[in-house]
Image 1: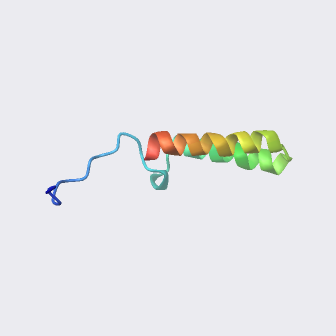
Image 2: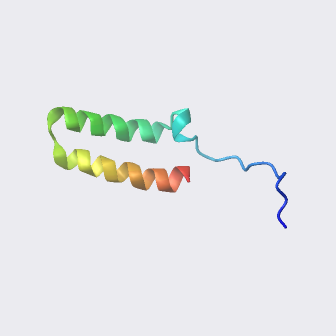
Length: 58
């Protein structure tokens, strides 16, 4: 049986809710691409965000 009282592990990177700088940069690039109608860059940033979140925040 596992010990339920163990302390949570600290993450090396901030969570998305704490304002991860990489998340902010990806979002800003995607928002600007959408504003300018650049569908290619917007789609690439959506993919980049998914990859980043999986690697850094899970």
